[in-house]
Image (cartoon, rainbow, N blue to C red):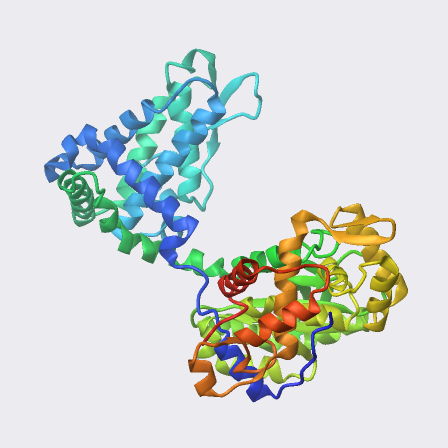
Length: 540
C-alpha cells in the first residue's frame, strides 16, 4: 500500500517537527554509562572501607593509608584461575578507585595525563614501569619507559599487572628481567599517582568526607542504600559529556531496529556502520586538505544490480542541547558534501534524520536551513520513521518485505498472480517484485502453497500493525484544535501538524481494507496501543 505523498512548505515542516519532537532519548541516570560508574565507585568505597575503619576518622585517610587499603582490597580479589582475568579484574578496580578520586577532587584524567612524568621527575623517580610480555606460556616482566602522556587506564593496567604478578597465586611462575621487585613498583607508583590526584590536604579531606558520608548513609538507611544518592549528582556531572555524545548512536540504533522490523537485512539492505564514499579535496584557511565524506545510512545498501536506481543518503543528527559548533559545521559542509556525492551517485536522494530539543530552540536556524535546501528531499524524526522513511523507500521503488506483506493482506484472493498485479499497479517494476518475493520466501516471511501466499506467524503482528498505520496515514486529514483536544482522534506524522483521523472511522476502514484477516476488537485495540507506545500515533 503506497503512502500518500505530501509537499509541505518549510514552515509546515517545522510545525510538524515541533509536534513530533523527541526532546531527549534518555535521562543520564538511565544510561548504562551512569549506572556502571555508580556501581563501580560504590563497590570501590565499600571494598576499602573495612581497611580504614569505615572512614570513621579523617586522620586515618592519609595517602599512605589509602594506598595500603587499595592494595589489601585488591589482593583479596585475586582468584588464581587465570592471570589475564585476575589482571583485568584488578585493573577495573584500580580504575574505579581513580575515578572516585577524580569525582571527589574535581580533577580530571585529561588534565592530569601530562603531569605524571613531571611529578616523577620532581621526586627523582625513574620513569620505568614493569610491563608484562605477550607470551601466554611465560609470565615475563621487563622495565619500559612510561609514555609522556599517561592516562589513568594505563596506570591501572600496569599496577594491576604488578599486583597479580606479585601475588602468591602467581609469583612462582613470574620472571623479571633484570631481577626486580614487582611489589616495590606497585607501592611506589600507586603512591605517586594518588599523591598527584590528591595533591593538597583539602582534596584528601574531600575524599574522606564523601566516603564517610556514603558509609554513614548506608548504615542508617536500613537496606535502602542511600549512599548512592550522595554520588548521583557528581557522577551525573562527570558522565554528562560522554552520554550526550552517544545520543547520535542511540538514534541510529533505533533506526536499525525499525528497519529490521520492516524485514530488512543488516549489511545488505542497510549498513550497520557509517559508509565512507570517498575523500574530497578542500581548501581551508589557504591549505589543501582531504575531507572524508561519509553517511550514517545509505538505503538500499548492498543489493546486487541496484544501481543506477536511486538510493537514499541519510545523515543522523540528534541534539538534546546546544551543540552549536558541531551543528553549524554540519550545515556548512552539507552543500559541498552533497555535490561530491552527486558526482559519484547521480541519482542520490538526500534525507535528513533530525531530532532533539536543540533543534527546537538554540539550533532552530540550522534546522530551518537544512529543511529549506533544494537538495533536501525530505526529513524524518524518531517518531516518524515508520511513515516518512517508508514513504521515501516507496518513492525510489525499493519494495520492502512489509510492503509485500501489506499487498497480501489487502488482496481479495492472496493468490500470487493477484498480489503481483497489485504491486505492479502501485508502480513497482517486475524485477523488483521478483527480488522481494524471493527474499520473503527464502527467509520464511511469506509462505506459498499452490499459488496462495500467507504471512508467517512471526511476521503477522508487525504487518498488521503497520497496515493500521498506513490506512490511518492515507485517510487522515487536518483537524481543528478542538477536535484534537477531544482525544477521539489519532494524530499521524508525515503530513504536517494536526493531521489526524477519528478512532472509530479508522476501525471501519481497517475492517474494509484488510481482506485476509478478521481483526478482533482486542487485536485492534492492542495494535493502537502498540502504535501509541511507538510514538507514531498520539492523541494530542
